[in-house]
Length: 355
Image: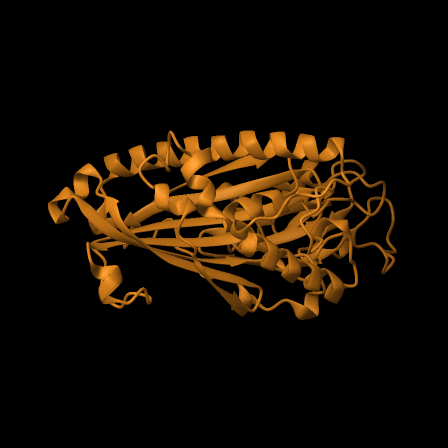
């Protein structure tokens, strides 16, 4: 049911404060996160091997974590190093340790075979504290399967309709212009030009209309790295609709991560912003408020969609020409599931309702 050999976002780096133990669930596995004295992130199975009490309810003692039910103490590598009232510690007294990496402001956890964990495969995102950018971050929980959120992000034609009052009111072309879709090793690259977009008030110094270049990488399990660049009107034609090479007038960044917790709960991490020279803190605050309102619109319709799917799990969806991105990504997910040896119903290549 789950792809285990993959990097998943467990949280923002700033969430994991020194001296704190944070509980997380990823693909139905309970995790306990904390930092060692040197700041390194440790991720252990959140289940004491003795009586299965949550280690996240325990206590940090230097770099070790003590279960506060019966006092077993675990080292950062998961080995039990102390059992109160017992000198002999069996080799089986341990909990699983998960590889973890901090990158781009996120804490990444590898949920599969430790030997297969390759940090170089983690997609690059903008750090929240990068002085070259102004970014604001948040997160929301969805009562829905993660692939429904992936579908949403891989078909931005919904901007025109689902976000009519927030993002799509002046972008009718999102539903009309077909993007170019290119394969990545574990995902897709989606890109398109939108000509003659009405300029926002602060962009009108460059003209009443601008050409917009929209490009994003979407990598399993749902890492969405979007770059939206604005150019002078006519640039799309000068480029013959190929990717632009010149520096844009305005460049916006959106970095998002979809993390499945269970088959019906998903955590959605997001950051939005722009180059520091392009946006001031006040404008960033207004932009982020619009972004959060749009994500609330997404959550409302996706959760409602999930409820209807659960009423009739075997019913087929009707595919349209707009479904190229979601369909190709679901085929990739099925390949990853087969490779992991855990094929399941959540990633059918057909557009079925039942997942």
